[in-house]
Length: 279
Picture 1 (cartoon, helix red, strand yellow):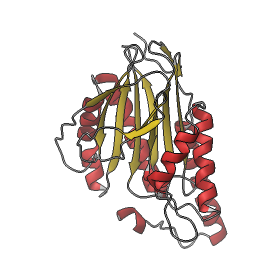
Picture 2 (cartoon, rainbow, N blue to C red; picture 1 turned 180 degrees about the vertical axis):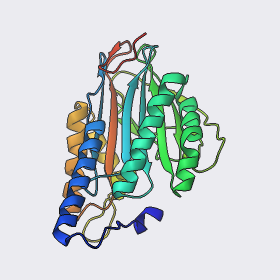
Picture 3 (tube, helix red, strand yellow; picture 1 turned 60 degrees about the vertical axis):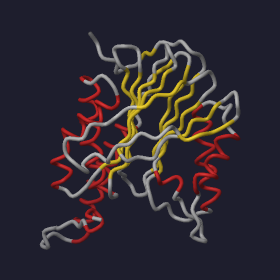
């Protein structure tokens, strides 16, 4: 991949130890910026919970998630995976975040949001020979309707609390952002009931490998989610991470691991947040 060949070029007249210290400072600064953006305040939902967590394979990563409360009382959620790793992927993650925040303010639904994002950053991604997979969804706490659009990302899992079943969301087509220009992203909707949970994730979870080279896979993730479906979102996050760590048994992480959870407690709710748009 393009970013796998990325290298730094330094002035050879600078002593090696100074170069190393300078590079480490730059990496730490980039990591702090990314951590601050990913780990900002999570919107408070009456009648439900949302949460996100990202563990980069390196000091900084290319996975992305975000929450955006809307004027109409809905909350818009996005998760994404930038091609590549390290600093270049992290830079594109910041670009993606800006495009999402801008699009979320001016679009009606998740399909329009992905369409606007592709329009905004397509040329930059093509110049850098990169792309981003994204899944974007709106949850309406008043009706319980969960509407979503997909740009080449893994479909989230829906854990039905009352029936103790787990299912992948119904498919909706959509090419990765940066793949082709002038794309129109379609939407699909499902009804969420009390105690239901939606689990968004990136492929670093199901592709995590143990010492024998076997992958964690979706079946093991399903089992873990069903075992902890009655817990709150932070406890579910911890259970998934613990399960992955137990499976990999110390094998170094090869890809970023990112998850977002939405859990519904009742059918009517109000959303408040530190970053709610102000009329």
